[in-house]
Length: 435
Ligand code: F0G
Image 1 (cartoon, rainbow, N blue to C red):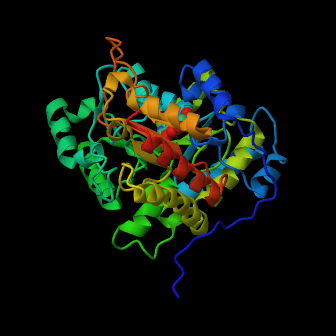
Image 2 (image 1 turned 90 degrees about the vertical axis):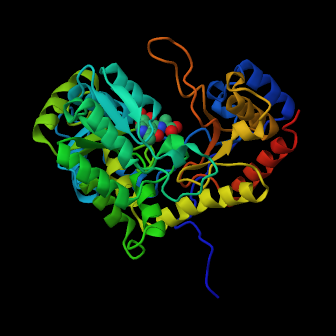
Image 3 (image 1 turned 60 degrees about the vertical axis):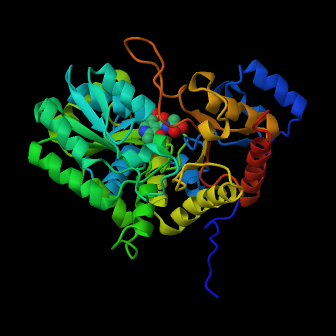
């Protein structure tokens, strides 16, 4: 018999006990939180699917690495270990550590963007776009149209629409476009991957025009897993080799190591251009800390170096994505509308369909997230009009096409039984959606 099931390539040696709440307790605390799951206290949460960011379980090796922290102000041994890991697994030449991803976004945006520039991207992440805007750029979404359609099952909904990119270059001129921001995988689209073929086409076009590619590499190993399993010619390649190939098609990356690399805090800017590196390592001193620690302790950099190596392991990634797909399949089987296909780091409920009686100004996704907490103490995250932010000039809401609730799965934290409880709770809320 062919074996179809996956299981975790680890066993559990320490557990964190959880508080179980009653419906009345939940009613009280969600009201106090203004029905905003971000304002709940974590001790009142049973299964915390707010985010996969900084919430993963570190391995025994990562914890052991924490004990070898070299807390020197300058030139910490752990910085050099991290530099080695970034070179070995991602192939980028120069490293500037930052306290997390947005620290790196701040540096690269300030260095590469001039007022009036255009930054095209395959959708956006909230902090990434805001840093681009604060540096004076206008962000333009050039993701393929399929990404805005929750039901479309295209396997690479993170792809860039090459025609949209060409049209932008024609309209504004390459000089106004310092870089294209390419995310692997695309969080706001539902954790959707970009294909290698598409990335190669973006590389060819940008090279022709002298435009850089800055890679939001936060979930690059997860993207690589999808390429391995969905793109022709990659089935026999390792996640590690695909990760390296992706990075080789870009000029540098901003990393939130709180995701793929499974640390509780940390990130970096990695870049191949010496001049940009020089500017970034001068600037990081002002905003984060000296260039050999960038807002982190030595121990954090050590855990990150080890976590990067663990993140590109094929068995790890099979179990990681396997668990997310398991939850996605369960919820889909019940007939509840979710973003298709299930993405890398969570299951995204289509709140505009589930609560179709609500207009976007009535925050359907925020409402659904609050109801799910009331149901069973599961915390999820709104990814809709609230997360989309306000127009920087007018203060008015942005209206994203997708109004989603994200059930984000931390890595190596919850069991399959937890996933079953989540699916059952979503089903219970769905059953009373008309009320
Ligand atoms: N880019 C992507 C694609 C992200 O998902 C995030 C964070 C960042 C950049 C910023 O990194 O948080 O380390 O500063 N996403 C988290 C989330 C917060 O819940 O999706 P950071």
